Image (tube, rainbow, N blue to C red; front, top):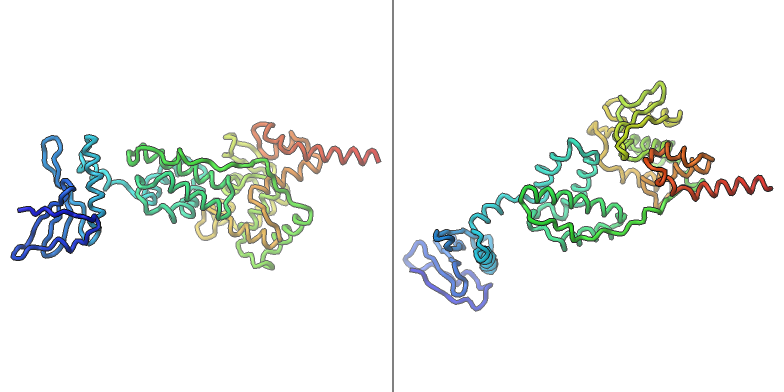
Length: 382
């Protein structure tokens, strides 16, 4: 026989539901909470939800009192009642919920294996998930992650010092991942769609002064003097400075792509989607030849034999050694363009050196060309 008790406070201590003397098991119903049952035995107390759906009776085990409070059990019953009101069977929904992975599980088992064969920025995805996403939402079920939660995460990243562009790349990754989660029917909507992008100012370029360039070269030529031990990243930074190529293009370089006799590098994959040949300067070629040929990739991580996933820490150490601040890795590309224009090269030549698909992209350096021409005009006038 069931005993109904009124609960004036949903957080009422579960000890108020004793096991009647002489019984090994007893089930209580709760006034005002339709379907909730509290099953008390000598070993444990369990919360259950009894209901009828389309003429068939069901029982859902909500959990044990040692794992959840009475208040949490009541809240869960209210959710199940809401599903019934919508014509959804809570048992089916519960089974579905049990299959939903955490964000970290989804990233590891589903997303990353799916994109690895064809996504060139795969190492960046791995790094962003490991450094920026898993520590905060890795243990959350996919359907538990909300727009406010992601807003807070991205704001925290921006406040921690990441650039707006970097935060927006994290946002884009999240959006792609949740779209894939929708395809697997683990979530219904993408919570990222209502997360606003951070405003980017892509027109800000950072160039090295003559003094900074001299200091940087000193640090790159004498790394041990500054306690810099990652010589592969030292060579990578020097190579970026000498060629103006994109970080990912250099990090993905293979020995088989470079003819060390002619100094010609076949860049098969780049942002424009078209392969191109790059003529390396003697100094850039010397930088490559100074590296060990122990892996397929030229700038390989000595520990893994694969490209680095993140070089920000050693890059920052190099910049600090040279006493240079506010310098991003991509700014080395801008600096190369600056040196090319200021040495008198035309914007057409700079476009080819940088591999821009459109001359409009190279136009951002037009002001440097105007300065060079003005200086030349003044010299002639003098």
